[in-house]
Length: 119
Image (cartoon, rainbow, N blue to C red; front, side, top):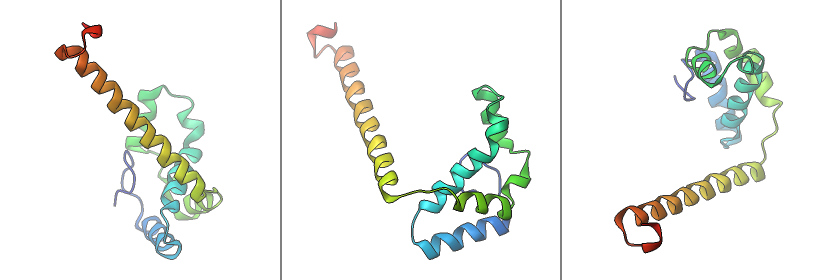
């Protein structure tokens, strides 16, 4: 019952509630809301760790009370996610992927000698 990377199994009640919302709304917004709510509720702990500690916390998620549907879903539903926000995130990801592809091509040109300026 993994919904999110680095998050151990959620209680069945929470997973069912998330799926119910997804089926009613017919939108992926609930997944962004829940992911953001998890980060929001974990914020006090995450801010006291370096990146490695944050990843360990999110991998083990020792505070399972945050995954309780009464806490997590209530918090998630208070987070506003609009179609415009999702579009902007999608555009940023697409732009980042295109930039990475361009950098990879430039690096490959320098390695294989097809561009004399990089030799």
